[in-house]
Image (cartoon, rainbow, N blue to C red; front, side, top):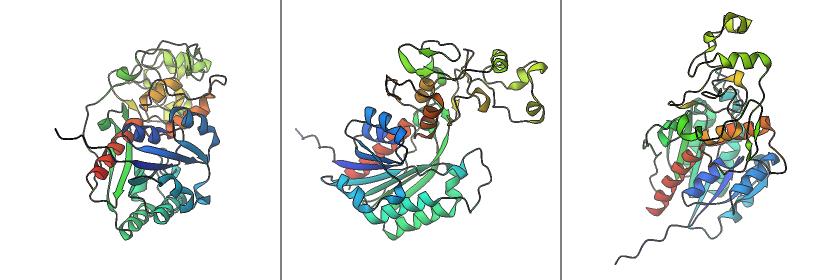
Length: 344
C-alpha cells in the first residue's frame, strides 16, 4: 500500500494583515501563517483571537527589513510572503486613476520581496492597480529575481463569494510554474449566507452576538427603506422622500436593498450606512449588520470581531471588514500555493 504523502511545511508572513481574512483563508488551505504585520493596532484582537499560532505584529511596513521577516520562515520547506498593500486612489469611488497617486506601499512590498526572496509571493489588490506603473515595476522586480508569475483581475463570485467584487490577484513562484486559480464553484447568493440569522430591528444589537448590530437610520431613511424594493432604487420612493441629489443623480445603488437570490454588491468600508450603496437588508427595514457583512465576506459565523466586554464600534469594524480579503478567495490562493510547492 502506497504511503500517503506528507503535506509540505509552508510558513507565510502576511503584510497589511488587518483582521486576518487572508491569513484565515491561507490557514484553511494548510499554510502556517506565522505572523501578520499591520500598523492598525485595532485589528489585533480579531486577528489573534481567530488565528491561533499567528502573531499580530504592530508595525509600519516602511520600518521593516528582511531581517524582521526571515525568523518566521525558519524550519519551513517553503516560504511565502503575501499582502494587500492599501491603494485607496484606485477604489471604485475614485475613477480618476492618476499616475501620481501614492503607491509607495507597493514599492515597499517589492523591497521586502527583494530582501527576503521567499519561494512564493502573492498580492491581492484593487483592479485599478494593474494599470499603474507601480504594478509594472513590481513585476519587473519579480522577473529580475527569476520568479514565474501570473496575474489576473478575478470575479470573487467565481470562488463562492456572494459579491459583485473584482480583485487583482498576483501569484509568483521561484519553485516552478504557478497560475491564478480560475475554477468556478457556482454562484452563491445572499440568502445562503445571511437568511438564517435571527431578525433584529434597526439600531439593535442581538443579545447572543454583539456583531449582529446595525447603525441606526435617521427618521427620513426609516421612511425611505420602507419604500425600497429588493434590487430597486430610490426611484421607487414617493416624491416627498427625494432630495435634490436624487433628482440630479442617475446612480441607482445608494439607499437600495439587496436581493435574496442574487449576489451582494461589493462590501465596502461604508456598508454600515444605508445611504452609501445597496446595503439595505432584503426584507428587514435596516442596513445589513456587521455580522451579515462579515458572512458576505465569507468569514465564518463564529469569527470574533471584538472583545465580548467591548461591543464593536460599528464604523470601525465596518472598515476592518470592508478592507479584508474575502476568506474563500484567500483559501483558493492558498490551495494553489500548496499545490505549487508540492509539485516542485
